[in-house]
View 1 (spheres, protein in one colour):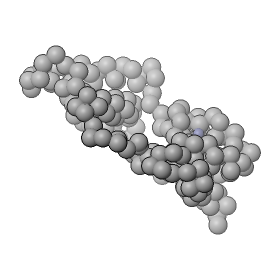
View 2 (tube, rainbow, N blue to C red):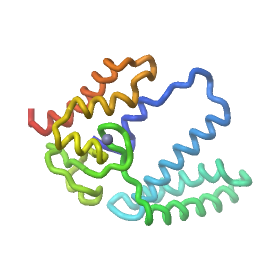
View 3 (tube, rainbow, N blue to C red):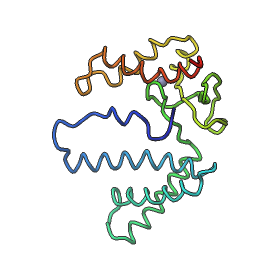
Amino acid sequence: MTSRRSRRMFWSMPFDHRPSDAERLDAIRRHAHDSLRYFATAALGGEDRDWTRAYLDLTANYMALAEGDSLDDRSMLEKGSEIADRYLDAAKRDPWTPPCSFCGDSPAVAWFEGPRFTHSVDAADKVRAEGAWTACARCLELVRADDREGLARRDAKRFEGRDGVDLERAMTMARDMHEKFWKARTGA
Ligand SMILES: [Zn+2]
């Protein structure tokens, strides 16, 4: 299933040292950037418009502290509203799309609708089901070819070697995660 809280977060590289202030700031900026892209796209339409707009404004304030020239409240709010507008404009041209549920790549090109995942649509706003499983172009080909091992290999590459995970273990984890998709499709 896809949600913006991607399971990929669990596979982030651990630091082998305590992060420096620069690394911390960089991580905060990246997270704020990803969140702003998502909230801006969601705030432009759909049922979640109101709360996503509120989240967009809140997150923009954190970004304002990360990139603004001054740190007082007034400057933060001014810069924050400028940032929110910038992301809203960008979202009109280039809407956020979720990463592939199989391999984590972006952009997703297919949304397999739950609960069976047998039918797919080509855009998030066409999804009528509660949840969807996304696929990038390459993974969509592999799904169509029913190449389950190919999909697992593609996914496993993403976290092999991290935290001492070897290929075999990475493959097992990838197969386990994809199992939910295949089981739902066959109704098993
Ligand atoms: Zn993929």
